Length: 104
Image (cartoon, rainbow, N blue to C red; front, side, top):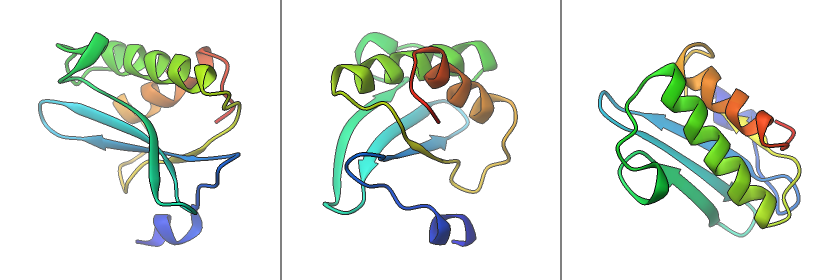
């Protein structure tokens, strides 16, 4: 709650929320003002299906999400790590989004 109290996504700068389970990764781009999910990527569906919870696959998932954000015209975002430490897979997702040209 300490992290979420400070991070708020808007329409021009949405929040990227990362959830990591033992088997899968889930990433959402959320506009908190309207309460809508703008786009998402996960390791269980779509073009990123079958990715594991690893640093390499986290970066691929982040790149995929970044491409979707660019298609929506989003250039900036706020990163919500959901209480996880910023290293390993959580850091790799952010780096993948940055590689695709979105400022995080």
